[in-house]
Image (cartoon, rainbow, N blue to C red; front, side):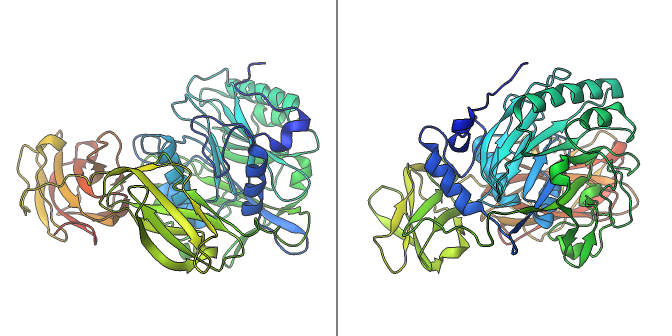
Length: 544
């Protein structure tokens, strides 16, 4: 049976952590991982009263835009608003897909205390994101497709049983192929997952109906029986048009026995939730998700949520490590741009407040904050404009300097990004059909007039961001034509940082500019649409 990763022997299972180049987590990988895994377990425990722990499982293929990625931000907002504990994620692409980019996405969408496994060498990889420690992970070969496999993780949830989850993305080809994939996956599970542990298979099955053979095949290890998760209107289907059951969270019988209603705000869903922001009401319950997120361009699936109340070991969280603080991020090897905003993360015990400092030369320390509540565990830091390869962060008890920890190794601060030096404009200038010939510069809150004159016309504009933060782009059309916009960073003109490609007028949305620099707006006509428009870019960090 072809395995990309092997499991430890039972004697070593509790102290063994499988790592890949793109598997980044709070617990360090490698030899001597048992104490680190124990720390991660202590940090991530989330216990409810009465000896039960509520665990929210989600299956999510909620990419949007043109590149099967989470860069546009619609899916990220859904994660932030629904707060899952364990996610079986598909099409797991973000930024340049480096370990730093994936870590940044997890930090933003879930939190710096979440761990992540992402399969390697895949065009549209599957992955697992978990609030609880991932104690083993890997991929099992999907023989029917070449651009992804089955990503699995063994998770140390509260209580005596581990939770095994498998993130899957079955082929659209036909039901026979999907059943072959299911048959192979069941064999992997039966060969590797202990019968007494909990199991969940989640993801994009691309199933046209619930009578497909794959469900009978999966029933050997999980339950596929009703009732099914539904949206606010009772619809259980999950494709973009809400007519087919593409997406699923199927769990073993011993876990299904603990399923409970999914409760968000004042709303309760007895069998779980199909997350469709277009029909969710009140939308404020899942903020910052926006009503149009599930209808974003090329978002072809709805996320699925199920909640479980599993027996926990006791009724109180275990204590944190005694008398110490620990720097989690940055901990060495990162490369952060001057002026960009990143999270400093730490853990602390027996400290009420901590002091944050940084150095750019290894000897001179600069204060970031004299005192911040230790329990916050994180601080949003604007990186100073000091290029260096010898930066470190130090966290200490605000009242006892001897209780201190420093980044394990140096990280880099790169030079501030260049800015567009041209004067602001109020009218586009042809031919601005590429980033290299972009009309510019668009100043903050200044209206710029333009027009797409032919069905092949594309207009590009440049604007400067001087401080990382939220940026709003607004495109107003003079008539009923359907025009769209996309934003790109100067460092990546292949993947859009944000887009608004609906049928709205105006087309308006916000995105987070993570670093200062030059950004570009591309205006296009949907299906060759033409017409006049007005472009406006605003935000505290956009240069006037």
